[in-house]
Amino acid sequence: MDHQTIITDLGGIRALARKLGHNSHTTVQAWFDRNRIPLDRWEEVIGAAKADGADLTVTQLLPPELRQDAAA
Image (tube, rainbow, N blue to C red; front, side, top):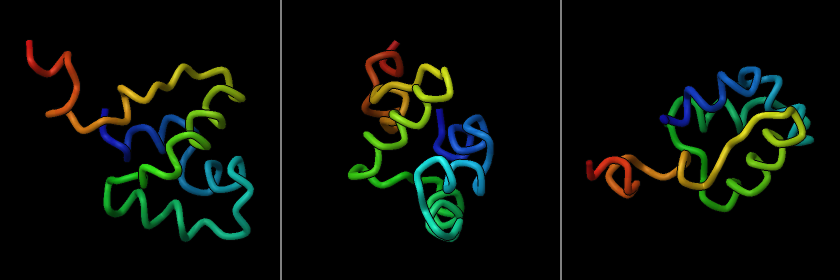
């Protein structure tokens, strides 16, 4: 799953920024534009997803070439 899809599935740029307690949406906007959520933010994004009842895992955040399911 690409990171733009994850951000969209979590309500979009502004919604995710609010869930993470950011004062501005620009940080999440930069992640969306680069299609990359920084590794040091994965835990808080997973936490925000769980708080929303979504099941987001580290495996889903990994680049496709590093996921075991991509080897099949």
